[in-house]
Every structure is written in structure tokens, then in C-alpha cells.
Length: 355
Ligand SMILES: Cc1cc2nc3c(=O)[nH]c(=O)nc-3n(C[C@H](O)[C@H](O)[C@H](O)COP(=O)(O)O)c2cc1C
Image (cartoon, rainbow, N blue to C red; front, side, top):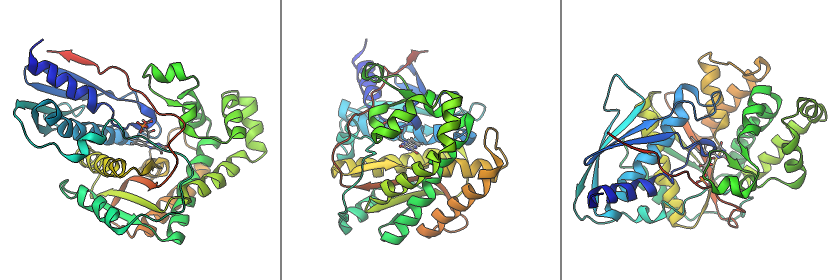
């Protein structure tokens, strides 16, 4: 293996620590000389939530941003051409590497340490300098806009609107099936890097964890619904999300693969900045994905009785952030101070094919 190839492989090893929905890691790479083509795998993400592959494109935005940030750690510079092949929108980037020494972006050292923290956050506000650092860090990415909210009433309203997702997911058989099927129940499974959420990373209270394990049985699922568990889950999660001192929304001006890639890049930069500052961070996105499906009439698997509350929740989130009509919400998150998570996710070995 040439030193260039070793360096490129080391960049990809680091970059795949990017976030993806349910840790789906929907990517593979094709390496040829000093060029890597990044490809998406369309079937890895939740087919109901992943409307028009938007979640997959966001994850790729984060991955590609990581590649650019990580390249100088291996003595390389990466130049990216996004969506290089108009005939194949599943090829998200062509990246050309050059061996040269350039300064390392401080965000690069947070790539492997970035993680999701689903715990209750402390009631301690973020200082204004941190909030302006978040806004600053997305500035180099054209188009996505970052909105931040720290007002308690607004956070409570956003938390309540986003927690609709838990109720919808538990009451919708197809979503429930996909959701429970994606849970990794053992630490060994998690360490194998397999896609899915390790149960310990979900930070569930013991009764919820007990029920979650049994939800794949339809009789138990019906019983759990009959006793009002979905509503309890919504209220519990409203409180959990509202514990954060700050929530953020990334919006895009139009829906397209390019716009979602840019949203993913901006999102990753904010998350890395939060990691650098030792802040806890948690994406809370389900409702946004469902709302896009309902708005465009692609509601396969969803129950019509939920459409109204999904659309209202999406509108409430936009309103609380002051995002105008032309802004499509792409990613929603909460951030603040918290104890470290009980467990973290792992990654599979990057799938690098040679051309
Ligand atoms: C597009 C996208 C949507 C996500 N949505 C959620 C979400 O709604 N709730 C959540 O708890 N985590 C969400 N996540 C976080 C992923 O579950 C997480 O990144 C993944 O499991 C890997 O774990 P890590 O972030 O700790 O590395 C999302 C991540 C991405 C990229």
C-alpha cells in the first residue's frame, strides 16, 4: 500500500465516526489513486422516516465534512465535488486528496469524541460566546441557516411538539416494528459496529426499557397502547427535551440532495463545536421527517389520524424558532450540560472498494 493510500484510509477511518440516523452508516467508498468517490446506500435508513433519502443525505453531509476536517491530520488536503455525477445522485461526492501540510482545524480533534447524549440536561444556560460560536461555525457553509432558542417557554413548546414523535412511533405498527427492530440489546452487538441503537444509549427509565423489549409482540404492543403508554412516553420525553437550556434548528431554502448535504455539513460543525466545549448534544428530528412526508402526500405506513398533529408540531417548531415560510426545517437538536452518556455507539470498518 502506498503512503498516500494509507493516509486516505486513515482519514476515512476517522470520518466514519459521523452521526447517522439509528447509526445506519449508509455509505461505502470507491478509492482510485488519489480520489475517493463517496456513495450512499439507500436501504440502510428507516424507510418511513428517510423521506426522499433526506436523512441519508444529511448523514453524508456530516461524513464529507469530517473527511475535509480530518484530511490535514494525515498530511492531506481534500477538495470536494458534491454530487459529481448527474446520472447517479447516490454518488454524493468525489474527493481528491493532495499531500501537503496545512493547519489543522480545531474541530478535527472532536470528530472521534462526538456522540449523542440522551440524558436529562442540567438547568444551566449556555454563555453567549458559545451561542455565537455555533452561529460562526456554520457561516462557511452556504445556504443552511441556524436558529437558536434559549427562552424557557419556547423550549417547552418545541420539546412538546417534537415529543409527538414518540407517541406516533409507538401507535404506528410499521414504525414500531422498524424502531424496535433497530435496537441492539447487547454490548457485544454494539461493539461489532453493526447499525442500530444500543439500548444503553437510549437512557430509558427501567419501566420503559422493560416494555421496549416486549413491543415486538403485537399482543403486548396493543396492551401497552391500551393503557396509554404512548402518551406517557410523549409527556416524559417532553420533560426530557425541555431540560436543555438551548435548542437549535437548521433549515434549508429548498429540498434537494445538495441542500440536505449542506444541512448535514452545518449540523456536524455545530455538533463538533459543542463537543469541543464539552457540551451534551442530542438530535431530535423524527417529527420533521414525518412532516415532510405528510406535506408531500407520501404517507405509506403512517396513520391518517396522526397527520394533523404531525403538521401542527412542525409548524409550532418553525414558529418558536422564528423560521420564515421559505425555510424547510432539516435538523433539530438540544444541547447543554449533562453527565456523560451511559454508553456510546461504535462503527463498522469502512467499506472501501478499489476501482
Ligand atoms: C439525520 C439524523 C437524524 C437523527 N435523529 C435522531 C433522533 O431523532 N433522535 C435521536 O435520539 N438521535 C438521532 N440521531 C442521532 C443518531 O442516532 C446517532 O448519531 C447515531 O446513533 C450514532 O451515535 P453517535 O451520535 O453517538 O455517534 C440522528 C442522526 C442523524 C444523522
